[in-house]
Image (cartoon, rainbow, N blue to C red; front, side):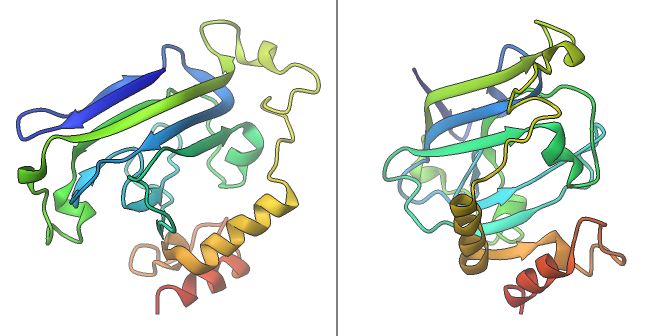
Length: 214
């Protein structure tokens, strides 16, 4: 399966490029993504030249939990796999557990005003159309349309709301190496934004983030 979404001066997919048919209480979601080629500053896809992760809770998108990374590979050269693990164990770690279901969205839009440090490098539509390609989409979990949430928590299921699906030690070590070398912003070091740091910002995370905000 292959899906393309594109941005031109007159069209885009900011609200919904495409979305999952079902809402999920927990699950594993994965896709191979190939980003627009050539100059694409200001073009925002699910993932773009700077990778920013967000976590929102309780139905609010006013305040997220962001971290930003430089890519250590060319995300437009070929498809790269991006995956999300969403379950109760991981949500709780950020102290903003939500009991509601979620949908999976993919979008592409003009984010010049904020994605390029205040619009200093806006989208250049001379390079349009900007096309992002998605392949090998995988969604596995507890769909709201199928069963109530509590009935989806099958005994022993690694994806369940009480499951124990975790990164393996080598995966966690690789993640920490990437954060140490390529992360250049973390909300846990944004003193202008938070007079008191969120409770999940432990000392180790603050020290790691501090090295990349000096």
